[in-house]
Image 1 (cartoon, rainbow, N blue to C red):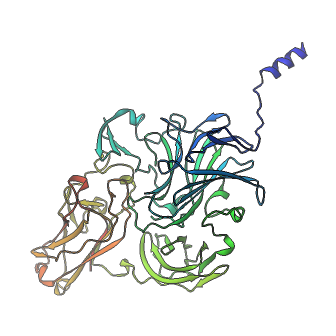
Image 2 (image 1 turned 45 degrees about the vertical axis):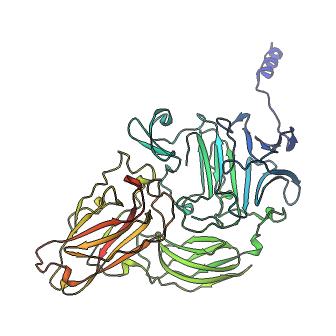
Image 3 (image 1 turned 180 degrees about the vertical axis):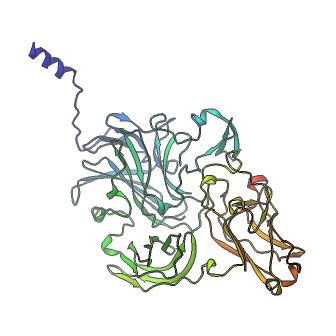
Length: 527
């Protein structure tokens, strides 16, 4: 009886499959088994990843779509090579014109390493899209089954609205993060299986969920970018599978030892031994409540490091040698710039920096600092009913809550905001300056002002990206301050009366509604 029970127990036990490291060629694909829990296929025709099986379950694809660079490269030259030193690995190389894409697997690791070298503009944008089967991972949507309840297209073909009026788009990130520097990975987990796309260091970069289950690594996208595109090698970025937990921290871009890539012949690869770093003693006159970031940038690379609280010491590691513009950012506003040179294998040491362009160092008579970091407009279209009305409202300095001041202004939606303020007899005796700081502008939108009966000259447009911005979930562009010198004769001589500042958005460009010319406002002050 015991033997029969043992036999039945063994017979009914799930069959254990022991994975074998290596690859096979099925005629159409290279089938790569990492020797653990992950098996994936790479098309020999175009380099698409068209199957991803983890622990026996297929996770790749919906509606016949694969995971790939851009929306697929088309016919490419696809080769595979094995390496045993310094690591046991397989590397697929996909060549499509001037673009070379690499897919790397290491023995025993449930990770897919990706690197992409883009040589010119023959491929329009640069992004890797991971296409996952729907209804496996939890949705991060504002309402259940959102896309089954789509009632109308709001804008272009990529912003939609359901029957509740709630809006959704692949552009809306659905998280409180907005900057690449703020997060290491994106991904999803069921609690038992996790799939994660770990970001690259973005040294070559410039500047969310889709209808199904997509994960993106955006390396260059023409929408809302603030820098020219940088050519060359992007990565590594890593597709990592886990048993439900978050990805390994040693894979995060700021942490890993990538020396095992040094001898693989990857186009554009720069070993750590050929890089240098910048170390700064500190930053003087830092304002409490603000994070300071020190960034390096030139036409080829960008890097950044967060300054420590207190004295503001910082380090920027793994920098390719060259001359860089160094910018100190208070939050997201540049308050100091200089030039530094970085040499291979050594540190560039910098003395204490004293910011010289902080607008708050000017003692203002009044200042309206808008909380532009409110994340709601990055979740949804500005027409969404979950947002407060953008309608033009009067603002009274010293009485109205700053939170009611508009973060965005459009020529065709909420133009001509009025700000009421009083001045003392001493203050009206001389000219004053009104500044309006913006973080982004669309369609050459810019502010002009009137104070009582006086009207300012018309300013020029700031330099911004040419694509949609405020309606696709971003207020981040090229920060710009508009300064208007208001003569003393413009102010009311009766100090008991309210002066009226009118802010008007002007432009000869743009469309209508939320696609009319607009700006995002960070601060308005008078001094």
